[in-house]
Length: 289
Image (cartoon, rainbow, N blue to C red; front, side, top):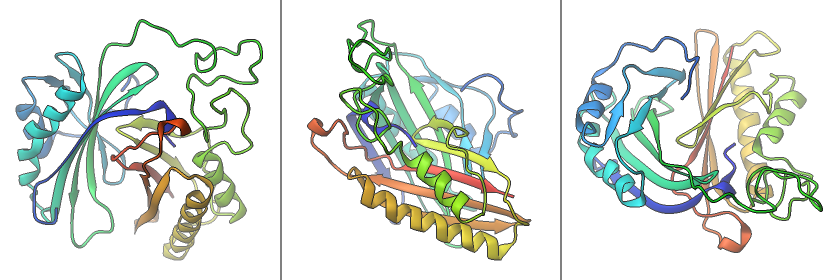
């Protein structure tokens, strides 16, 4: 899961549009659809939305974009304002939609995470279009704990001053290493699948994905069992991590493939905890076949 303490939230926009309110080596992109075309046209003044799209998990579409100007809290809020008309065209989705844009610092680099979510009343999960705009990295490197170098007196240094991510704010090892480890342990114990804690692809706009093979032939019954394990893991995450304010799981079974989406909302905590409020929920998308 995304290391939350790396994120200092500076600006948030959530715009409801109805009453219901990168890198190299990517596979060949899917043909561009109408929503992506609208995003490209609406955002042409401040970003280059690169051609194509990639469905990295069922219903989770990754877009690639670069900013034409500095990425700031104000410009990130403007992204949400400008892109809002795109979600009026829901097409077959149509039940409800919204644009979310959040500005935060991660590894000293300003970043604007953008997500267009579209719900369908007859489906368990939303279709999500997500991309990030990266700003210019800070020239001032962090000192001592949090600089990514294990200095004298430090047991670990993961490049931040977070708690609850395996290396705490004083650079001492934590016994609990995060959401990924817990997910791996619980699916292994249930003999359903190996959800490798180091095998996640992301983050992208607070979304991470992983495709795994089930340990048994995948059918609707096993998908239900996987959904139960994911829900139990959500409960445990709520108990273990005080910055998690809510967690729920969507599932879809089709063509011998089980798609799970763990949605995590985050609570407001004081800066002293090393974790800051984030309104853009986290997505952990797991595909089992």
